Length: 348
Image 1 (cartoon, rainbow, N blue to C red):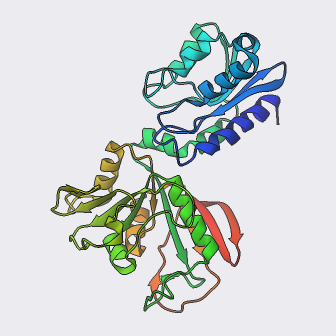
Image 2 (cartoon, one colour):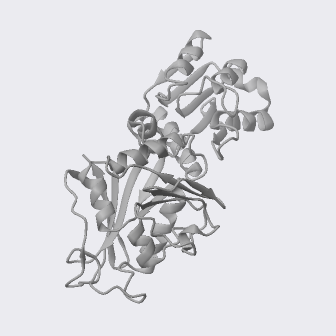
Image 3 (tube, rainbow, N blue to C red):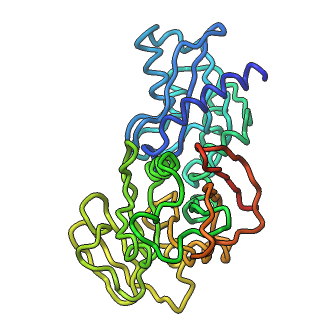
């Protein structure tokens, strides 16, 4: 690993701390060096608050004074912003503090930036290096880049299945509903806290009376998205409680009520495309799909998914609801969660 890669790796470590808190902004980490030593670090901590570069620069000023920045080297995992959003442009701040050298992990393809931050820095006479750990820097912002480049959320499919490929027994009860173990269940709730929204179909709501919240982890509840063409969700369903906002896609109903919303769409057209278009309009960058087999298979068949996370439980059901069938995928990781096996797949 080169010196540049070492410090960019540190930027990525810092950036990951913002997961679940900064969307729809990207995850960004920043490190500032002087004479080969780190003198300031920062990451984007919360949407609407200071960006990584601002936090790192402020730390340097507080500890060493502003003058040292004129002989420093700034590393940042994503191209500094060049536009006014919730905060002023980071590129302008770097220029103002006269930081002479900047190394960037990857460019920002968001239309408001898209190379303009780099252009600003170079025009100001700053030495700029690009493309350090570029693949890794894009990977950490897979949600952000997918949203802006594909005009839809980053889609994660998640389910648990038995060794003989069933996701539920033939006769589901409260006692046998959970296939995976309790620690795998905690993983699922952690993932919910990482993403902006979670989606299921009306059958899952009816059968499980699902809450779709983060209960076995500490974090923010995702927005709940329900596909309910026949308006079958009852008024006292858990999914309509006050724990998180819920958006229901219905055949006929258009209604806002107590933090929840019903949106009428034409189910004779491409339902998933209509839903994803609406989520894009609402600036929802990531979606975890935990529905039943039918919902999950629709996403797979229409090639509307980016990643799948599948628990294989150490048990046989012999009969029941078959698991979704997924093709054209690449396994990117696997691990044991006690007696469960967890697979991460990427859409090829």
